[in-house]
Length: 255
Image 1 (tube, rainbow, N blue to C red):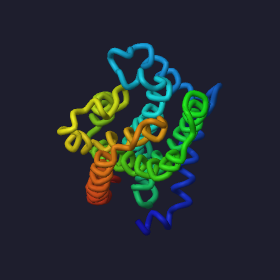
Image 2: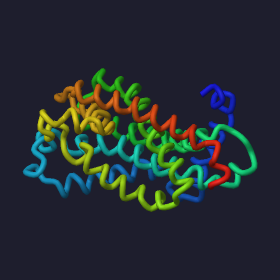
Image 3: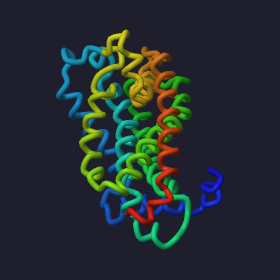
Image 4: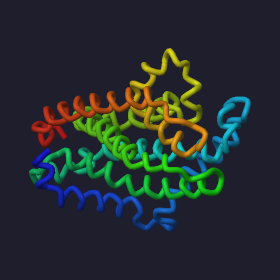
């Protein structure tokens, strides 16, 4: 990790480059970061009625869906970008030495721009349709936890993708399945209590549940699920880092 700190200027340069490339010649620019969760929120609110999702009906459905969609879309975008970061920068890997973890890290960092815009939109919706509270301060540690989870999954997939290019086609399908295994379109309370520990091994369960709880005044953070998700994120991060560092020396040869 000390080596990454030595290359921190490259880390931030690559993140800025990724942001510029993403929105280059885009008419609406970073507004897309607000349009995507808003459109998806409208579709979810229309498709899933109160009968299908009672808790969404008891609270404002806009805040209910948006509070989980914003962090989920960051996770999805960061994992997609990070998983393709090594292959997408193959020429750089062959010519220059630097800690390879910088590439998936820069991709995850660049996606924080979209997350920031999304959270700003969510904040407006909370102020209009709900009420602001001190629980929103939990966004700071939750964003850090979300970044670590996204980078861990993205770096692990990036290392595999460098050797097996099938991963590029697998990631969208994986994220689609992961969406339904996470409490985005349903509340965490919909999961039977006796199964929540096992379900919360999916890091996104506790993270998304906590984001939603901070946005809805009458909701409380499911602390056991969050703690399990924090633990699984730490384990996942450690495993991903060890695997990435183990394969790092071979990347220039196999990519």
